[in-house]
Amino acid sequence: MFRINKQLSLCALALTLSANVFAQTANAETASPKDSELETSSQAKRNNDIQLSFLRRQVDQNMSVGRAISSIAGHYPQEVVSVVDLALDYYPDKYREIIFAAISAQPSSTEEIVKLAIEKEVSSCPNIVQLAIKAEPTYVDFVVQAAAVATPDELDEIVRVAVLTQPDAADSIVQTLSQEHPNKLVEIMTTAINTVPFVGEYVVDALLAVFPNRAQTVVETAVRESVEQREQVMKILSTAQHAGVDNAKLKGYALAAGLSEDDFNSAITIR
Image (cartoon, rainbow, N blue to C red; front, side, top):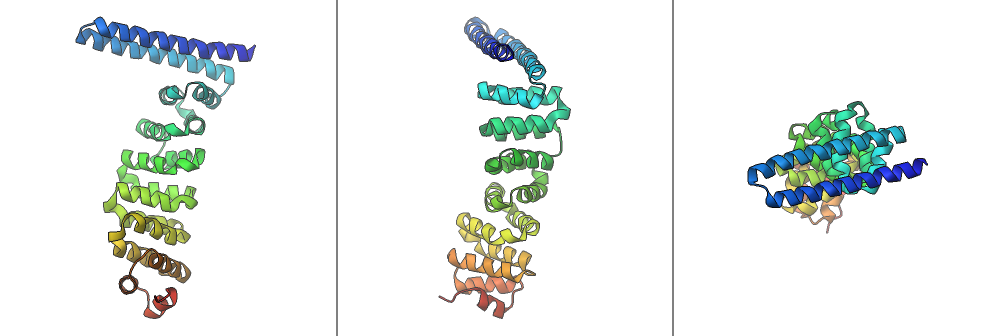
């Protein structure tokens, strides 16, 4: 009986929304611009009320807003963002459950959901970033990109939390954010390497692939931030060499960053 009621509720939502869309289209074809605008606004409110009523029924039936979101996303993926919008307004204390369930069920909407959560200030931006990455680690690039656009002043903390939450994706995180914010490349690199030191070589490899003309900045920053960890410096220099950085230039970058000539010579293979 529960399953039947659930299916009937889902069908009712689909039919109601479809009917409203049809009516809205028909009215728009015959109404004046002003009337059409008022009708659109009125229709949006009706759809909002329908979705809210449906969401509440789903929560009552599922005993959990997270399960309700998952159910709706599974049947109507195109509605997940608007439903999350309502859910965050009416169940703000359940934001963790809502965001996690929505992204897990519909990863392709990750970027929109993150933007929405940040705009509604249901929690701090770094907290939302961490939650979203845990919900769907493979969409980490979309998460950090959305967060950085929404709150550019928190870029440093976004990098720190993202790399700490998903260190295996540090190279991708740094590459994505550096391409979006090239003037912040040094700050992004510095934060990532200081947060998880072993990612230095991967970060260098990723950045040299997209910023070959900024090899000096990339290598010097990586070496300088890792200079106390000799093994990491060796790996960074070796990575840069294999990426095609000229030995003479590489040596200059390394020495400028504080590395000794002996350490440099032991780090690379002379070609």
